Length: 482
Ligand SMILES: *Cc1c(COP(=O)(O)O)cnc(C)c1O
Image 1 (cartoon, rainbow, N blue to C red):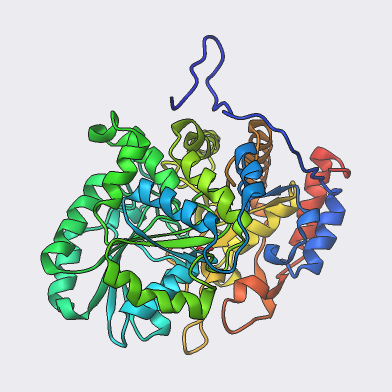
Image 2: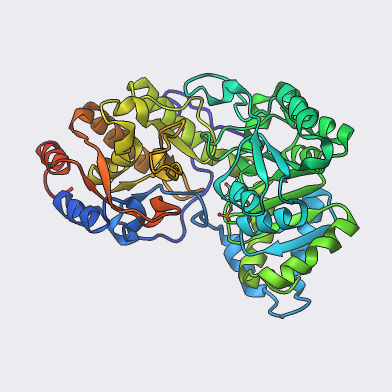
């Protein structure tokens, strides 16, 4: 089942779980939030979690485990080498993906490190539908280059296309002809995409793209970190797949690839990662990197307790009731805000709801970080922490000028099984309030700007006293205690 039907009420997504363990969260008084934000240098990465009401920064490592996952932890088999937990995990992944070999890693980027280390040489090119920050960094670190060949239509913010993550086959063909097959390290498809709004890729597109790669003898790699949401979208949006089970769809997808890797901080509701490999020789060629960088071959830097929980988490990922929750909540949030006139990335994808900051605060110059300013303002107006995905996350050009991002977005991630619908309604309400008061939001400037990954640890300050004005307007409507 994918959605509960209603008789007389406006349909809303219904949680297919009940809550058994809770964590208290609190909403600091409004002016205290301003103090906390100031201490954090107007950078929401630098806030303490206890000062946040709705933490929608990311879906990585913050998804809720089930009762079955937690109880499985007790049977974890501790051993440096040959843990039974590892063999159970390998068997479960082989059952799901149909590939024999598992290389365990501590998280998703470690898989990317190892795959790049094995395949990328200076001057090689990696074909992708779209890059992810860490996937790209590992390729470029080794002197390789990334070609992002998503269809142009995927980058249009507002649309109703079901699969905006699809790769452009004509561009792929042209790229292979131009680069020469021997210079293509591999083709990596991300299902679903992260940086373009959690938008999915269709099974048909993955099939066509991997068929093309095979014609040329190019290795095919699936980044399955966000596969859970992508499976839901294939089942509900791709006509030819609607009668297939999630397990069948997963297997059909995996059958297209030589390698499947994932961040288990997302896929499997736990923490860790893994690379599944079909070919024995390829597996052996990569295993040294595990022992060198991750840990022994039967844990790869993961805790066996997390691994045991993941085995259940992978199985839960094959359950349509469970995987429907994230996309349905996101869709609800996106649709409601869209109806209220807030510029959103549509249609709703996986991972989170994305606000088009460039439009919302179009009076803030790109050099003053519109999305960064909006994220800071959102924390002030309700203790909601989103993530900036725009110019602030870019690195400067070599001549020191700002590299203006092609999209300027605020992402409100929905950690899986964590928030309730009433909390989602609170977020919708505050985003709408902020949208109606958007003229009060001003820009930011750096006071401490790290050279790399400046968005993580940089300190900023407002270009005027706009945060004070905004908080006074907020207090006028909601009172000082919230
Ligand atoms: C999160 C993510 C990664 C990296 O995984 P980590 O566990 O955070 O290292 C890689 N690819 C995609 C698509 C992701 O969303």
